[in-house]
Amino acid sequence: MNELEPNEREETGSLAEDGAEVSEESVRAIKELIQTVLKTKRAYEMYPSNNPILIKFQEDLTNKFESIFEAEDRITLIIRQQDIYFKGQPVYHNSEKEDNLALFFYKDGLREITITAGFSDDEIMDFLDVIRARPETSTESFDDDIVTRLWEKDFMHLSYYVVEEYSEGEAIEEDEVARLLSQSNRTTDGALTEAYQDAAEEEGSEEIFTPLETISMGFKGVFSLGEEEVKYLKEEMEGLTDESFLTRAVDVLFESLYLDKGTSDFDILMGNLDSALRYIIDAGRLGTAAMILMRFREIEGQKDEFNQKEIARIRLSLGHMESDSGIKKIGELLNRGQDVSPEDFQLYLSQLGRSSIVPLFSLMGEIQDIKYRKALIESIVPMCHGNMEALNTAIKDKRWQVVRNVVAVLGRIGDKGAVEPLKQALNHAEPNVRREAVRSLGMIGGPKAGDALLFALEDQDPQIRIAALRFMPRAQSFSVLDSLMDIANLPDFSDKSIAEKRALFEVLAEIGQDRILQFLIKLLRKKALFESAKKEEIRACAAYGLGNIHQKEALDVLEKELTRSKKGSIVSEAISYSINKLARPEGRPSEA
View (cartoon, one colour):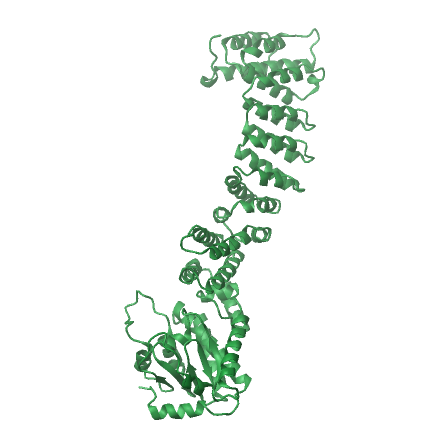
């Protein structure tokens, strides 16, 4: 057993009280050693013994001890509730109860720990095993305190001093505080004040983990890693493909978040989760990123468990992911050829709120792969229901690709309120936008949409005019009939392409049925003394129109005119097509 006997403690105490000044370099080395111990401890808690990341931390810890023992023959640490001192100088401070190394030792009576030169790798691992966190489900005995575990390891180069009677919250004796600080040239009051100031400065300078550090350590990242450690971790993480590891690391961070609610560590942990989220997105793991956002949403709704400040901090993280910069990162990921499944992309998008609508529309104009554009449109439609304000903003974008996609979403939403902005889109300089506006108006349907489609019949692009005609029946209104009849009676109507003329007559017939029957029969039977191509096209198009009127009279007229038509002519072909169409079960005419 290496607990110090009274005479041994007196010898250690005399060394500690040596009036010789301690160098800043020595104090800094001990601070770094303690930080390395804590980081290695956490790696020890997460990884199996053969994991290269854990092995690297162990090697670094060994090197720290060896470096210190080149100048010192022993390291004596004085333990207080919130602080650890080396030769009277503060080398560790933590005012919280959780994850407090000083309190971990102090609560079980430890007041001094001395480690001497020759502290081996095996002893380092035994020491880490003593101080590591043990899960509640472990079969190990947790009745044993820290002193019992130290005694069981039977260290050769580690000794300690224990106060047998201690209860948590016990005040520190004034004479003991004075003894611990007397080795410095400062007064007791001044030393104590400066010690806390140094600790506060040190605490304020601690860096939040980088994404790689957060994922690698996974638990309360309140200590920064060295440059070489970050470099090594980066190399390890770049080759990491184990999704379960990432998921577990995130789980640990969220578990800590629930444990540390109401404390200052909550904000630190949120910073680490933000870093982890950025790293995961950059790695292309949008499914895992979606899981993090999903859990943020869960916490956001738990207002009875988390305070307002914590809920606001969660919303800050969500807001960043929904911002222009957050959405832009997704676009960069997708455009660099990263292997991201559209399903994971859609899952991620499903966790974004309505504030992301405008940035997402902007993203539509930047995504190069059509499969991601389609996934984006499908995902953004549910967000846009009842949010015409955001859509009215996005539709003003200068990029026609963005406007086209906004127009497509308006059609899929089916909101009657979208008719007016879609009608305005029919004036856009880009034909693709106008064509999409026609399609969306057709999807919405109704009399107002029909009126807007009539406006599209004046478009300079014949394909857009034809598309507008094809969607006209969805207006579900006879009010468009007069306008279509006016177009058919225009002097220059015969100059239009046969495809456009056919579309007009077929739509007239589909909407008007018996109202338009006699008009089409008259056109079909109208023969000129001298046949012209344009007049024959009108007759053929009238025949196509009769194929959409489900009445026996229409079929009778077509059959009679077929016998009078020149075989192989465009009129004959049109009549034959419509007869066959009406003869099919779905087109069979009814009795007039």
